[in-house]
Image (cartoon, rainbow, N blue to C red; front, side, top):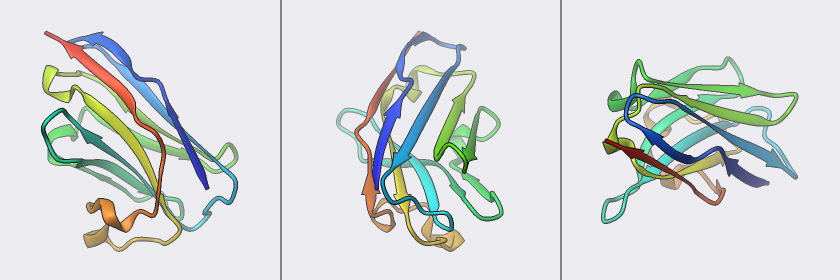
Length: 126
């Protein structure tokens, strides 16, 4: 499967961006899709995930109430709506896919996703 992320950009604090991840090739109707981010000098961290079946969603504490992940099976896309952005949200955002329905304890860990797209840069100015 190939993943293509888009939608990043420069926004002022308090603004919004919508990231989109398009999957092509072999897609996983029963798998899990996630968003991770990595800021310069920091480790990659989990942002949000969604299971295709049941649409169960997961969020890191620092984005709860501000970010929303959603999926569209027909278009094979997963979007991340980001509202109330803060300067500390500045990072390169990556989408990831697993062919498996990851259990709850596994969705937070990057190594459980076998497929990654290129990143899209999000910069939030203060």
